[in-house]
Image (tube, helix red, strand yellow):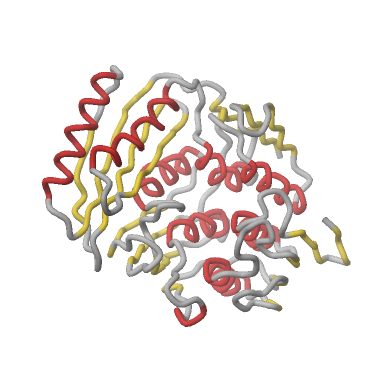
Amino acid sequence: MATTGSLITIDGGHGEGGGALVRTALTMAAVTQQSVRIDNVRNGTSYPGLDIEDLTLLRALAKVCAAESVGAEAGSKSVSFLPTRRSSGIKEAIDLDPSVQPNRTPNANVLLNALLPVMAQSGVYSRISLSGETYGSHSLCYDYFANVTLEAQKKFGLYAFPDLVTAGFGREGGGEVQIEIEPSALEAVDWSTPGELKAVRAVIAMGELPMTIAHRAISHLNNLASNAQLPMEAEISGVDSPRPGLCITVWAEFERGFGGSTSMGAKGIRAEAVAQAAFEDVNSFVRSGATVDPFLADQILPTAILAEGQTTFKVSRITKRFLTIVWVIKQFLPIHITVKGKEGEAGEVTVRR
């Protein structure tokens, strides 16, 4: 990292060098009202340069911060984002011309999660509608976002209320999520131990497929939970979707902490196999002694750094992506973030303002 005047310059190829780095840098610039330039955008991926997801987030944040930008084009290897005011609320749909990247739409849940800490600090209510993918194989799925991410955020005092208008399975998109976000005073959490297991739940989200598929998935989940001596509350969510799709989300709620997993259906893969993949991840999490899974750790860290007091949580696996997010945050704030443990292993994270 280098600073030129008030401009923070970040190497977009650092660590994982992917979209999480770009999103975190843009979010931190908006939250701290500091200008940032990201060079070597997504240099750690097979498709370097700004993509439609980055551009959609940049467009949304530019509205709430009255920000100027340079290099905000698909494929750009360098982009600058220069906020001119404190974040304000937003009440509108956030869309981007699909011709920017044909046949690929942003993941709505990923972008909404990036906007959460910004909107929570704005001091006013926000209402956002975002179109795109809502269920994807390699990204945040709506049921995880609604039942794990947002429930964890509530423990910090961040309240957001989502509504799945239309489900979009895969990068072809077609989905729409609306969300209302309250202005929030954030407080730290102590999730150093999980405490009592309160529930294990599952949602089978299905569009344009026979109901027997969902019933088979539920039957298999109940059998798996019984064999593992875990409780299970499973439900079917018949979603409105322009194309067929299946996504199974399983999560565990502890007295202090959450962990979940999602598994996408695909042609030729039985519903039982989809259910088993999600359940096995959560079963392992429950027995790990951790209080957050690796994906949730990424999502709550930007909230934790804004909360008053000291936050502690145990993550079931430290990822390169998480360590990259920590590094980006430290470029913007002189904050204490301690990660005990090695990449690929379980660890404990402490955040102190």
